[in-house]
Image (tube, rainbow, N blue to C red; front, side):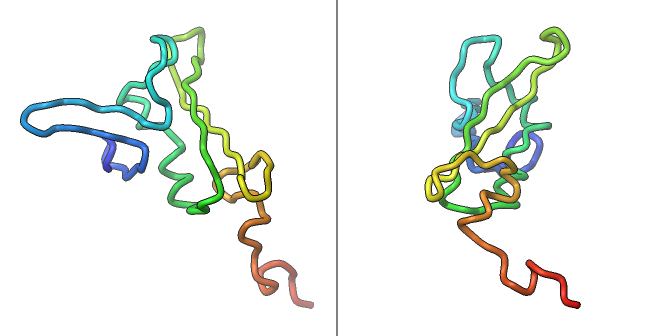
Length: 111
Protein backbone atom coordinates (compact mmCIF):
# COMPACT_ATOMS: atom_id res chain seq x y z
CA UNK A 1 0.00 0.00 0.00
CA UNK A 2 1.17 3.55 -0.60
CA UNK A 3 2.31 5.58 2.39
CA UNK A 4 1.12 9.18 2.91
CA UNK A 5 4.23 10.25 0.98
CA UNK A 6 3.33 8.14 -2.06
CA UNK A 7 5.97 5.43 -1.58
CA UNK A 8 4.96 1.78 -1.79
CA UNK A 9 5.49 -0.09 1.52
CA UNK A 10 4.35 -3.59 2.45
CA UNK A 11 4.07 -2.71 6.15
CA UNK A 12 1.91 0.41 5.85
CA UNK A 13 -1.84 -0.07 6.32
CA UNK A 14 -4.48 2.54 5.61
CA UNK A 15 -8.23 2.08 5.88
CA UNK A 16 -10.18 4.89 4.22
CA UNK A 17 -13.40 2.99 3.50
CA UNK A 18 -16.59 5.03 4.10
CA UNK A 19 -14.89 7.97 5.74
CA UNK A 20 -12.54 6.03 8.01
CA UNK A 21 -9.06 7.38 8.51
CA UNK A 22 -7.04 4.57 10.07
CA UNK A 23 -3.30 4.49 9.31
CA UNK A 24 -0.67 2.31 10.93
CA UNK A 25 2.73 0.77 10.39
CA UNK A 26 2.48 -2.94 10.95
CA UNK A 27 6.24 -3.31 11.30
CA UNK A 28 6.56 -0.87 14.20
CA UNK A 29 3.19 -1.68 15.74
CA UNK A 30 1.57 0.20 18.57
CA UNK A 31 4.10 1.53 21.03
CA UNK A 32 3.91 3.90 23.98
CA UNK A 33 3.88 7.62 23.03
CA UNK A 34 7.60 8.41 23.01
CA UNK A 35 8.21 5.57 20.54
CA UNK A 36 4.90 5.60 18.69
CA UNK A 37 4.48 5.68 14.91
CA UNK A 38 3.22 8.77 13.11
CA UNK A 39 2.61 9.22 9.36
CA UNK A 40 5.39 11.83 9.33
CA UNK A 41 7.96 9.06 9.95
CA UNK A 42 7.23 7.55 6.51
CA UNK A 43 9.08 10.45 4.92
CA UNK A 44 12.49 9.28 6.20
CA UNK A 45 11.79 5.59 6.83
CA UNK A 46 14.40 3.27 5.22
CA UNK A 47 12.07 0.23 5.02
CA UNK A 48 10.57 0.90 1.53
CA UNK A 49 14.08 1.32 0.12
CA UNK A 50 15.22 -1.92 1.74
CA UNK A 51 12.23 -3.79 0.34
CA UNK A 52 12.91 -2.44 -3.17
CA UNK A 53 16.62 -3.29 -3.01
CA UNK A 54 16.39 -6.71 -1.37
CA UNK A 55 13.40 -9.03 -1.77
CA UNK A 56 14.99 -11.97 0.07
CA UNK A 57 12.25 -14.07 1.73
CA UNK A 58 14.70 -15.22 4.42
CA UNK A 59 15.35 -11.73 5.79
CA UNK A 60 13.12 -10.48 8.59
CA UNK A 61 13.04 -6.81 9.49
CA UNK A 62 12.54 -5.24 12.88
CA UNK A 63 11.97 -1.52 13.31
CA UNK A 64 11.74 0.86 16.24
CA UNK A 65 11.32 4.58 16.65
CA UNK A 66 14.24 6.37 18.26
CA UNK A 67 14.48 9.96 19.46
CA UNK A 68 17.17 12.34 18.24
CA UNK A 69 18.21 15.83 19.27
CA UNK A 70 16.92 15.73 22.85
CA UNK A 71 13.63 14.15 21.81
CA UNK A 72 12.68 16.86 19.33
CA UNK A 73 12.77 14.59 16.28
CA UNK A 74 12.17 10.88 15.74
CA UNK A 75 13.68 8.45 13.23
CA UNK A 76 13.03 4.82 12.35
CA UNK A 77 15.91 2.45 13.16
CA UNK A 78 15.82 -0.85 11.24
CA UNK A 79 17.61 -4.09 12.02
CA UNK A 80 17.55 -7.27 9.91
CA UNK A 81 18.06 -10.97 10.59
CA UNK A 82 18.52 -13.81 8.09
CA UNK A 83 16.59 -16.93 9.07
CA UNK A 84 18.51 -19.14 6.62
CA UNK A 85 22.07 -18.28 7.67
CA UNK A 86 20.98 -17.52 11.27
CA UNK A 87 22.91 -14.26 11.52
CA UNK A 88 22.32 -10.55 11.89
CA UNK A 89 22.41 -8.71 8.57
CA UNK A 90 24.77 -5.74 8.74
CA UNK A 91 23.50 -4.05 5.55
CA UNK A 92 19.80 -4.84 4.92
CA UNK A 93 19.89 -3.24 1.45
CA UNK A 94 22.43 -5.87 0.32
CA UNK A 95 21.53 -8.89 2.48
CA UNK A 96 23.63 -11.44 4.34
CA UNK A 97 25.65 -12.51 1.31
CA UNK A 98 24.94 -16.23 1.74
CA UNK A 99 21.35 -16.55 0.53
CA UNK A 100 21.92 -15.09 -2.93
CA UNK A 101 25.59 -15.22 -3.89
CA UNK A 102 26.77 -13.15 -6.84
CA UNK A 103 27.64 -15.00 -10.05
CA UNK A 104 31.38 -15.50 -10.66
CA UNK A 105 31.36 -12.84 -13.37
CA UNK A 106 30.58 -10.19 -10.75
CA UNK A 107 32.83 -11.51 -8.00
CA UNK A 108 36.32 -11.27 -9.48
CA UNK A 109 37.91 -8.81 -11.84
CA UNK A 110 39.30 -10.21 -15.05
CA UNK A 111 43.00 -9.70 -15.77
